[in-house]
Image (cartoon, rainbow, N blue to C red):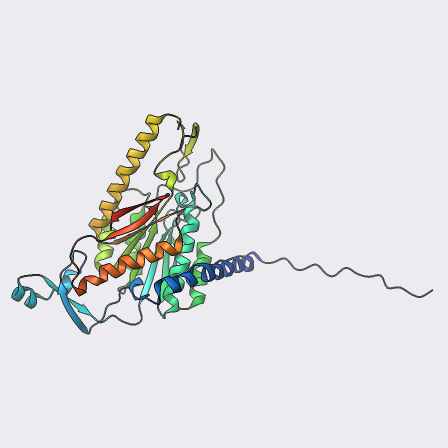
Amino acid sequence: MGLFRRRQAPPAAPPVPPQAADNGRTEALLRRLEWTVIRRLDGLLQGDYRTLMRGTGLDLADLREYQLHDDVRHIDWNVTARLQQPHVRVFTEDREMAAWFLLDLSPSVDFGSGEQRKREVLQGFVGVLARLITRHGNRVGAALYGGRGQAAVHAVLPARGGRGQVLRLMQMLGPEAPATPAGKALPHGPTRLADLLRAATHTVRQRSTVFVVSDFISEPGWEQPLGELARRHDVVAVRLLDPLELELPDLGLLTLRDAETGEQLLVDTHDRGFRQRFARIAAQREAVLRESLARAGVDALELSTDDDLADAVVRFVDLRKRRSGAHRGASTGPVPVRVATGTARKEVAA
């Protein structure tokens, strides 16, 4: 009889550290966005990425009539007096610019009635825009508000360039917050978006393109700091929404819970009068919100949870092109931008 060595099982693989696992998920998400959304945008935009960001410079390039969103400091008073019409100076834009993302991560962005939640829409939009911007040599930074258990700005990422910066930004967004058990209030007070906007005035020093990404479900008082921020920077309000926030279906008795305070309310969605009142109040809130954004002088983009991200970016770039086209003689006034809300599309004055 020969001697037989007992076959040993291969050693078990060491457990993957949570940080490494998160890095792997972030890398996989960014890679998927690059293959599915950014490659598609390369064909749709045909290399027209300059309108994503508006730079500033010192070299005078042109003069044009004053537009409502223009900085009054750029008015050329000599030309204005001679032509009896306000004109502003247009400068050659800097090659290297910075973009900042002011991100509202309060619990209300964890809501979603379909395949994805508002938080996932936020992650996808930030990943795509940050990658497009850094890919063309510019820098991105971020300020995060209202993470789990947080009610203030809890993280700031200084502006830097490169794909690694995009990965760091997406890593800071972190995994999606788990659903809160019914009946338990969240450890988070009402959202105060004004705190994020005021903090940005101290964080973003040089003129930049600032994306305020939020569902704008907040305590009042954010309109003034948003307007002040828009006077120093090129500000874009990216509003997250879900179709169920605008209109309730007939689902019988439902328990509605405030995502930020945990307060619950039992409603009868079978009541047609209640659904109509809900839709009317939601429409009034929409009108007030859009009016506030227009008064602040910011470009606005709406992202629905059932919207196509690539189409939304194309709409945004088209809006920016028409805005910047004013220096070629375009007329004044608001520019209509098509936004997708639910399955219907409608025109909104941006």
